[in-house]
Image 1 (cartoon, protein in one colour):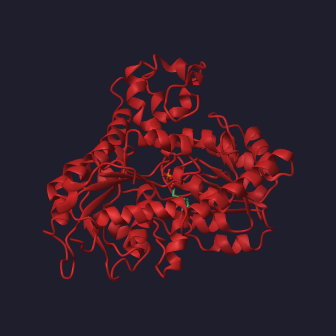
Image 2: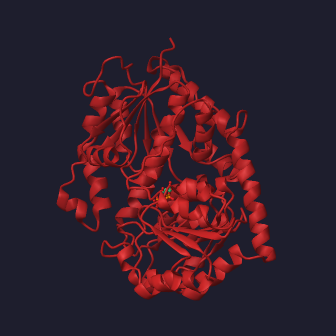
Image 3: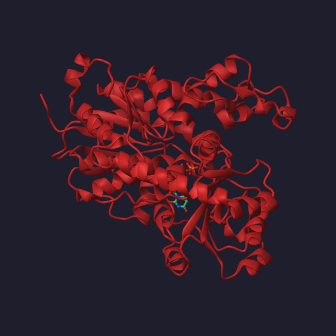
Length: 487
Ligand code: UDP
């Protein structure tokens, strides 16, 4: 019997997971699905402060569960590890209770029919099982990033990682070709993932990543923020292992289609957005500005900050740099920028703590993006037709950057050891008027059109979302009758 689908969504509590999950929530809601979006209590409070108005829409409610962290844990340098462990300890039971309708406001709320989780919270699969509803995972990376994360287990078993000693980080070992990952062209070992760079046989992060990715096999379906034309080979290979893969990206574009249906955008941010940067962009020439941002998690050493700053200064071009609190080691932000750098770039540099990145990338003044190749940032740039200078440093950022600069032809890669001369040279090559720059701009325009086509009615992502909503509508009573098949 068909009833209103009710999706309970729970992302790992950081921007890179919350933002795409929130977009998926909006999309599902725009297609008639009842949504309960679950944050940690800590982030719920933060979101209320920065975004306001989280409550009060028909069929879209927010709930929260405790993350179990003390204030001291929150300030600790390894707070993400603490958060991961603490969530596993303290969130499963309240999530299961929410899914079973035992806590939270209930009036007029239909029963939860499925749980949608992001990566890194696989314990929510148990909560879904306990509540007797199917689970879907929105894995927030590229398809290539997901497949590479799955294969960390084989890399470990075949002895590629952990590394024998420190010298392996710099002696060319990371250039070892890896040509046996189905769907992925031959790549450098170092590009498969940041997690291969460990010397520790028990490396916590490596184990967590491979376990979390492999646990997705327990879910009813896998949802990816990518589109078919962007990663066709790897998606084919992935479907041999995961029968239900829903490619619904780029989420930012899919959101525009949903807004066409009269729904609001998921413009939530854990930091206050600086609106003045958009006014500053309005005053700049088309295509002249380099946007610089390393997402919500990256931390630069003071040396790296200086190399970047002076590299940007040397270009002579205008740039907008998002320097969030905590971007610089020692919990520092813009206060760590050298005074003489600020003086040297005055008038052509705008430092914001945090911006409305999608709006910034879509702004006609922006002609290039210096990025850490986080997947959200990469897809937002693809959707805006903006070519990139890539400086990956963590997780899937290396493989994203490999595709950006290789197969997709829309980027230039900086070396791991940041040098101001290379920063300046790459930015110049990206933003200038060379044949290569023009080619990257042409490719970027082509990928933008492909992303728009995928999310427009009838496009591959649009249809994939439609199929996903159909699956969510099937009640758990019918779950046993489901058969694996091409979604
Ligand atoms: N972002 C933003 N304003 C900023 C910097 C980043 O809104 O000043 C957003 C960006 O649009 C993206 C997210 O933060 O959606 C970062 O996600 P990504 O996957 O690129 O990197 P992560 O933060 O996970 O490393």
